[in-house]
Length: 199
Image 1 (cartoon, rainbow, N blue to C red):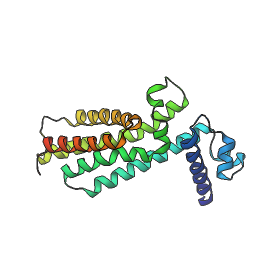
Image 2: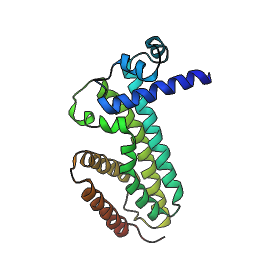
Image 3: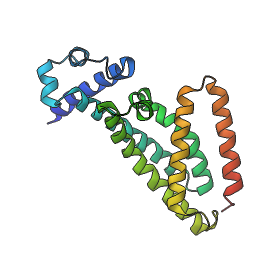
Image 4: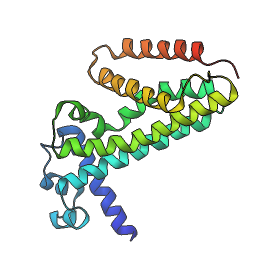
């Protein structure tokens, strides 16, 4: 069982490198087999198709992002510091999902297709977790009095997702990354300082 898992992981690792470098469309099953040093039959033993491999790579990446962001949350018990750290770490965390990040525009540009569908599935894994985080953070903020009772948890969660997903596109396409990053960090400091009272 351990060997099967190792083989599967080596296929996914090789495929992830190829998908990141060349994109989904230009990567072939033959190339995945060669890069993972496995026979093509072995690839098909573990995965039904290239899109199944792509989905598995994306799922691994989203699970990594969730683990990383959960660690950030765990480091900061104080709500104001936690939200600030979360927002500042999030843009980098999405960038760690390299295959997802390379194909992110397919979520907005493609009308349909297997890549868009796979990306939407991966996106939902993280969106569901992140929405839950923001709803919980809002509830905690309301209970401790650092957030106004006027801030509704579900609306807060949905609003944060819309804002952060829009920023992903900016970070993907903006030429002066350093200027964008320092501006983003300054805006976070202003928003959190002005909207979260001291605990």
